[in-house]
Image (cartoon, rainbow over all chains, first blue to last red; front, side):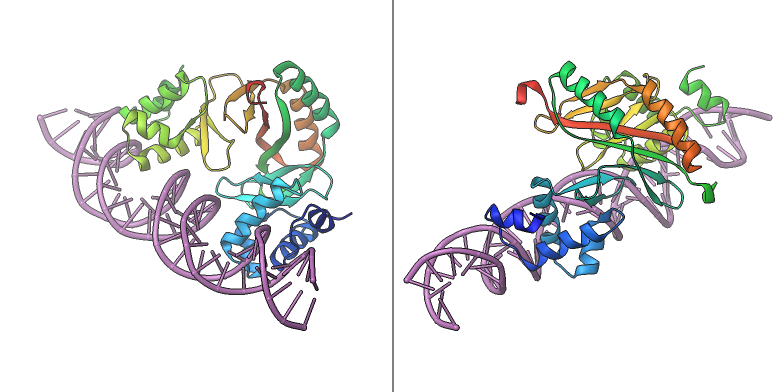
Length: 131
Length: 131
DNA sequence: GAGCTTAATGCAACTTAGTCGCATTAGTCA
DNA sequence: TGACTAATGCGACTAAGTTGCATTAAGCTC
């Protein structure tokens, strides 16, 4: 069952905006910002923000903060990863390291009694070409 | 040599705003936002933002994003740590786990040729009292 | 397919975080 | 004490995100 089918089965409607936004995020191989979605799909700004909140609440996308101005969004269909961000050219690379972090996260839950829902791990630096 | 002395030795001025902001961040045991600084010190908003940028460029403070609306700032005098954030009551706890992450970071630098300047690792969840 | 219900959308006005240019103030040094 | 200029304050601005409300359209029943 894909994301749209899952939403339908939960009683949510399959609208043009919803389909387009979800598809755009699933196809994109880099995080996407709200205004990029507005620009490339022509969907209203409020709708985009509401839909992003909704998809996040449905656990289908996540948000990340790289430059400290705006959120970016990624589909969760892709396998979980972290980011390496060049503070000069703003290039984003993906990074894997979850085995270690999962172990730590479970320990953390036990120690703190927090129920951990997600984590974010971002590295900031200067890429080879910018050095 | 403390932060202020270091700034002075580099030719920067020791002003009231600078002293107050640095002191506030050093004394606080939780991350502080720009508007909290404006409110509690009565320093002008532009000055606060400029000063925060400046202190960050001098490597004396760091910024973190927890709720996705605004930056928060911490003194680097405190030992490096990460955050555990309750998405309900917005309580922030500090977390240590740097041995592992440092090893990983060095490997990452080698693999990607990035020169890594900093990283941020935040955990989001629900604290015991909010569960 | 027509009619009904209401989730989802679009619009416009608003809020909030952060930025910028410029005139003024106040550290620092001689 | 005076001169130099880094730092400040003010006000106007931008950009990201939010909200209320009237309208539209997805999906169900007949």
